[in-house]
Image (cartoon, rainbow, N blue to C red; front, side, top):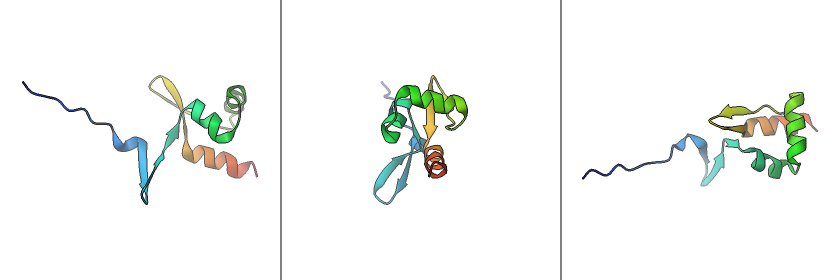
Length: 74
């Protein structure tokens, strides 16, 4: 019998030093990072303030987009 070993794709993480940083966040993670409600996140997305990616069945918010949003919000 042949065993097939499944591995996780490494494209979801990037290595900087010894820490792993996610490249994209779910809506729930984005709300937690920005300390905003889900409703506020949907409003920001609707106004075009935060761009998301439609990957598979869920929306993902790139880390670079969150940093851009925070820089422009200063």
